[in-house]
Length: 426
Image (cartoon, rainbow, N blue to C red; front, side):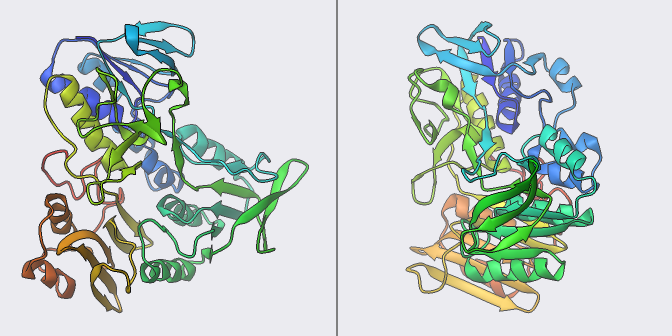
């Protein structure tokens, strides 16, 4: 069997590892646009803050490829695909054949279509090159505007603040991390970040990047507010890298559509990670779950099935863990519902913590834990199994029956496993 993987992020690498566990000898080839395979985007902001050594940016040592007999080809992005003859064409024109193919080409930062966005000093953060460019250009910079109040933007804000920069976060929605937090949780985060000297503005939408002689000098919003800055970082989300599949016959709607085995509509072709559209296990809607844990799980499932296994993506919902200046938080599933919705909500708030469980039909569909994150692992496992609420779970809201587990610097997961927990990949 000739295994081909397009992409060297977590989905691609974990898939290759899963293939090797079942098949020790068949050729496994990884073609990737990245110059630095097995690179970890989630660690970039920590490295930028000076809190981590450069080696933490990579979740597999370069020698790993040789030890596992995996042929990796950096700087070789896929350009087109012809499934009828099982042929992949690379950007340099070279053609490679496969028996089974995994598309794990990831996603790219979404850009804004506003005047001045191409000015020097405007950047996104996705690759090591992006991080190096931001640091190089930040010499002498004092004020930075981050457009986007999601978890990536907030984490970056904290780490750039640690470098002594003045940071302002601009979010066009009425709350931070709109797909994960309710209004109260957002307010708690806002208050915490403002205490640390970070500016937070919600309900403001950037209309124009101001510049002088080609370099950024500030931003102007649709609300006619002006913020002076020397650098702008756009963190408004990502878009799956699937343009190169035009004409291939692979079914695409936002991203690559896959079933619970990570198979596309074309036999022998799989997709995983940020490029894939999977079904949310709570409401069955198609989602692009662009998180590290999701990419690793999907990669394991795809790789196992490519090599003859039979794994399915049984549970699929968003999950994020953060530690912002000592304020620990875990949010998972459909946790953003506020009081007054049709959902049944259990809520406890004290001075040092905010804990909320969202239920539908007696089953947990989401939760937010801020300040005290004990029991997060149990709640996650119950969500995955679709268990009904029990007195034991209700007690989690009013007590801490589990040992405290402080989030380590790498956000509570070690390249895919939250709290280093064990279990099946789904």
